[in-house]
Image (cartoon, rainbow, N blue to C red; front, side, top):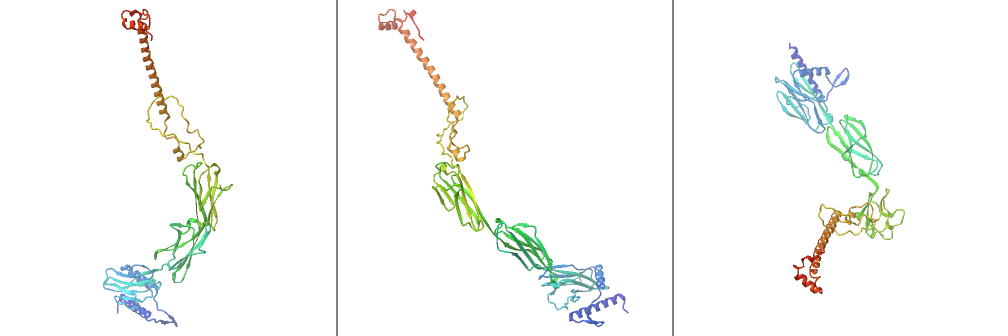
Length: 459
């Protein structure tokens, strides 16, 4: 009589063989008058599983994307040449050692040895999902299972909008739907590179363990959103960077801007003026119009498309000039206020001087600011004024010249005074004894020694 462990092994082999044969051939047994598929109690497989864990029968769970390849590995530590077999979730034998009883060519033997049975399953579908069993025919028998999880990416991603064209300020409602995915997809919204918040998501369960996900978002569009993509992005373990884009056509009224082409500084009397009007809108503005606020345009004003010309400004041109533009959405305008200043005064010639430290005397210098010029000057007005006149240096130079002239007058006065005294002295030398002036001069020249006492000096 056989031992109890040996009887258990033979019973296990017999049951496994009967189970595999019945399932492969599609036959069923009749129990108590009803047609049922032959099955063993779950407790029996749980006991085998526990036994396998104690005896180091190992396997790993597998996660695979639909259509790809799943690899199942049954590994044994310290095997004593016991038989290894692999069963599918229906308990059909896929491989018994290196032999494949199951007529499914998608299963292929990758490796077989005394310590491992490795099998690949190609073109995995949702129907292949479930538990696969590794069995080791030892005494007692051992069993371990691995679970294949099949991921299904969304097969379609669509954005729905109510219409194609919107006006600035309108609210746009967009819906993004991810069809038939497993697990349920997560949808996020972006406007360009900026993530949008406030979306509403609905998840609907479908047949075959799949889900349909629908996300809705509402956005108030601005002119900056024209031709900017709204992106529906899907987060799913089976796929990366799955997205779809929707471009919104946003129409808006014109934005108008008036600029001065000439002059760049103050607008002075007698000078020309050129204004330019730029209008941007969608659709493109149909017409640009110039007018003068609260008055008519002067007769000498020339308008050419978006530009306004005045050849020679005068004070009567003062006022506010307006540029208007319109399209099918609306109209806008921009104003330019013209103030004509007095013409510039003639500047004095530039003077080149050197900086010196000297004593200055008060001098009258014309005040360049005493004109009818405005108090506020721009760069152009500053260039038209006196160029670097140093009043202190001019005063110093004038003082030096006056001082030099005074000194020269004093020297000349002393010189002429000395010469006048000498003349009178010589003339008086012989005046007392001479009968006339000629005799006096002759006596004075010759009688200097004898008439020493009669000398007179006039200083």
